[in-house]
Length: 173
Length: 286
Image (tube, chains in turn red, purple):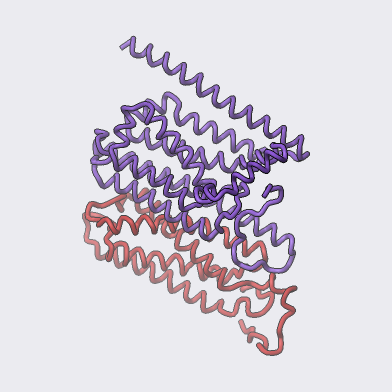
């Protein structure tokens, strides 16, 4: 992909006519990251709390502050999922969605949340553990490694899509 | 045994009759207003909004219907389900029915202006600010579950009715303040409303976990066992999630629709990314 970003000085586009059709990279990335983080949080709740029943709704060692922070995180995830989805829809509506950047954002969100959950929630705040009655180390390693891999994929995608929207009509491929 | 069952069915019949009367009156009044509005403005009222209103009435009525009321009396989970229906799902449906818009369209201009003036009062602004509404709504829940109020309301029928009324009204106020399609002068922007919603959801789910964690000590004096409270707390948590998810969808769908309308009007020029503030609509008597 060699757009070589046109020449920055000479080509000032006819702004009003074109601006709506130019992919907006950052908003696309941010909205998709919001969806990604919220999605991972939802997967966490559905798979680990409900299906596997590894996590507990509440574990007796949880300090009260962690309870509150957990509540805030839960709320942010719930509202964030909806907000992110509508932000993406809004970008698409005005032809400003940058698909490659959005994909990058999605992975950044997925991995970012996974890592945050693994380190801050499980280890620092000790809201709950991945599983009970087992040696936690392999679980923690797998959990955080998975988060790191997702985050890395997101970073690579973001790097590769960094020119998206730099030229008008870039379709992000 | 037989006597008490008879007594129950007798009391039930009266309650059912009362609930039926309330529903029929509400729906008839709604129909009357829809016709008045069509007659005055020459525009049809959305069937979706009518369906939403009917759903809201149905949910509210079923929440206090005898089977659920009995369940609520016996088991804390029943009480939580009752509260979810009465304080969260029914209000959302009623608010999405845009009752104020309907009323403004149905009233004569002078009465409409008077209603507009009432809505424009400072007290109404303060009361219908999302943050205030959230405190009234979720704060009421905290007060009910963490103080002896709950146990007291089980013994005092009048208090019981007042608590239910509070749930319904505070729920409506909160849903209206956060996601109401009705015109509301000086309603805060989408970002503020979303922020308040996050805090309210957080407070709600924290309360559920506090109840769960307390192992039967809350609600005080209710005499519920730890297992019963744990089950009820999970219903509160996940049931609340569904209602709050719907509320968030209503909030952001409204924002999206207003954005689409602006984009359509300007056709081509990108809208500034600040969300549209309030709900400027035509036909609001100032």
